[in-house]
Image (cartoon, rainbow, N blue to C red; front, side, top):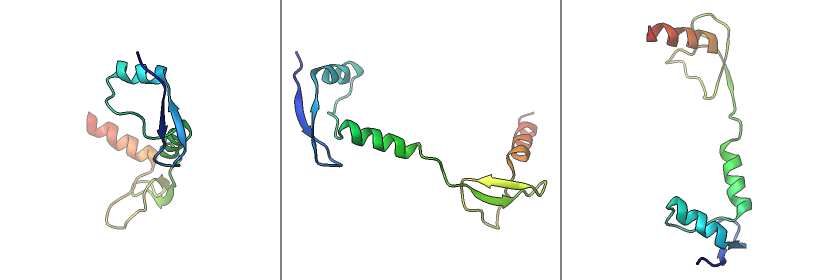
Length: 94
């Protein structure tokens, strides 16, 4: 029913095969569009999203300890270390 199809990757410009098996899988999942990237570029995009975030160091507003945070701290809002943040979250849920 489905046939192999040659497509061009929108990232690297290389041709890749959209196999009959992949086509059937896409149809089974209800995907309407064909893939736009080759396997290598799809994997690279997924891995880039999973890359570790850069952490910044700040002083915890509650205990004065070191807080490692994934954003640049500003002086207009308090920053809390993981332990103090978890404690505050736990107390607010009660």
